[in-house]
Length: 320
View (cartoon, rainbow, N blue to C red):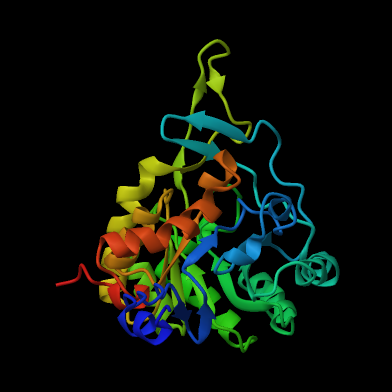
């Protein structure tokens, strides 16, 4: 007769499940993997591929006060180890997002989302943020002062500490939600911009957005992109993004979302060791619609291989 008690007492202890949860200013995520704005739409396109509730959250398309068609085509150019985009904040405007997109998201995504906010004046940033403040589906606001593909806005605010601080201060006055400012790498000193945002009340920071670049059509002897220049993203920018996350997270006592060239679970862990609390995945989604799901599924094995029991504990592990 089988002694079930003996078997139960001598069964090898099960290893505790890897704890992948992280917290961004009180917003708990099941894991740190967040598709970046502009690469995931409003989630609707990707839910046909897999259950996107596996994600920590996602950042939806950059939202402006008015609807925008974006830049003329062509708007995408391929590069070695990356791509250029000059989409130009194409979106239906904040009213359409509030009335149509957010209710639709609530029908298939159970978690709070990240709202990426764009603007062409301090007042417009504040107006869009105020409109999104009452939306329960929005967990935090990601203020995009770093888009390189629009004139008279975006990166124009993110390359000057005083301008970035002014946007941050205006948004903080109209919302109760955590405010994370997305920074541009196209600056001499990103730490100075980050400190200015924090002094103005930012709850967190997101970096980096794309690097400004261009390609030429050799036959036409003209730029490939109709906009001439565009934002360069992909695996080639990862070391730059990692360095900036490291520098900013050491200088600023707020959570950082790391972004730029992330394609693997090891990249996520490296970003977190550099100082990121969560990690956005951008252009990888455009090459492989299953990229984020793969990264989430591979994280537990990567954690076990590296002796990591809880992801939150490795944030900033590489700091002296």
